[in-house]
Every structure is written in structure tokens, then in C-alpha cells.
Amino acid sequence: MRSDTKRLLNTVQLLSEIGIIVGYLLGLIPFVYAWSCSWVIPLVFVNFVLAFLTGNGTTVKTILNIAMAFLSLIPLIGYVFRFGGLLLSALNIKELNRGRNY
Image 1: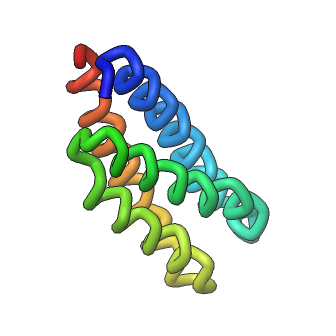
Image 2 (image 1 turned 90 degrees about the vertical axis):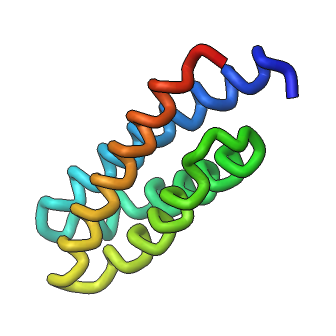
Image 3 (image 1 turned 90 degrees about the horizontal axis):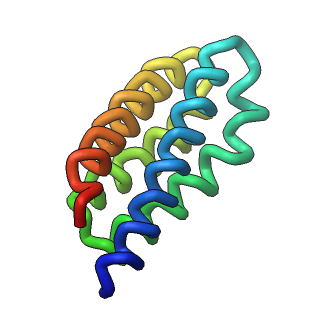
């Protein structure tokens, strides 16, 4: 894969991670995750595809974040998984920022 293509895909993944974090943060407001999951769940799958294509070291955390997105739908206990998803997305952002000079 060309370096400029990889850089573009990493930037798209970084922006979608930011969207996921926003969705999880809004989900901390009671009953709002039912709305924000409409973009969090598709974005975690987009991130998985991007992480797989680029091989940027975020694939495992992205797979875990897919599980967190679905487990966040569980009433009350879902808050724990939203915090977990926030942490995983933050770690992915850190990893993506570290490797921006591909």
C-alpha cells in the first residue's frame, strides 16, 4: 500500500475514532446511547476494516471496541462498557497519532 494512501486511511480512522468517543460520551447521558449507537456501531465496523487494511496496530483494540459498542446497549451495566469503549478509542487515537508519519 502506498504511504499516502495509508496516511489517508489512518486519518479517516482517526476521525471515526473521534466520532466514536463523542458517541460514547453522549451515551453517558441516560437514554442517549440508544440514539448515539446509531453511528457508534457502524463506525466501529468501519474502524475494523481500516485497521485491517492498514495494519497499524489497532486491530485488536478495534475488535474489542466492537464488543463494547454492543454490550453498551445493556441497561445500567452498559455504562461500564461505554467507559471501556472510551478507553479503547483513546488508546487507538494515541496509537494512530504516534504513527502519523508513515
